[in-house]
Image (tube, rainbow, N blue to C red):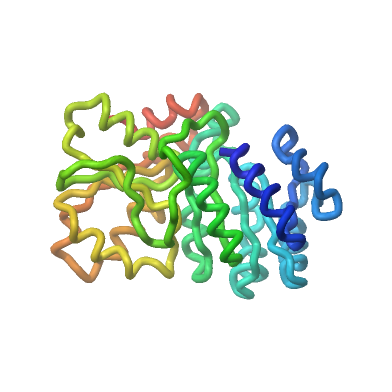
Length: 294
């Protein structure tokens, strides 16, 4: 996913001279293609995330679309006030790029887990969450964000994710994206990296053989009203996310349909149990420990 991100950013920057990249003294091995091509639009803020976000908001106020790149926990909770007051409140075109969502950096322990980030970012009224499930969705999210600059949160996996879509899809915020085909009445609904989990469960576990798969890469507070009609189309929907239940994607979907009590019973949620918060281990181990197993 990281490679797809930087490739799309470089291509866009050749066309749009107002695209800038800001990092917090990391990203080496990924960001060099942008830094070498556009050195005057590449800034290393050092290990000072609050300053990094304020600086990015300043650039955005002068007409730049700024991409702020860091490991997922650093550009979110460390600078929550700057995101809230400087970026979201002023509706500035800053895209917070978080690498290693969920427990992708699980070997580094709880300080590097990103399992409460949706809860923070989806509470911002102007924030568009972009959580792609494979590199093709990364490219689709990037193309949408570049055409529609706004306060946004791009949540990426760490590395090595496989392409699940045959080509780059067209995305609309709040609209579910179907993966594959089939005439069934049940579906997975994922956001982010668990799209690959849903695909493997469908293929390898007979309990899910009658499920379709949908992802929702673009969502947020503004797009809750679009969910009720899509929920109505399915007898059962199983959400899948690498985040805690509280404030997560499944909770967001429940909130979107709270006025339609007959729809709530169609929703089942799969999410990470809080027990992972004190654990260290590989991503697949922590996912299974946290409940993301068939």
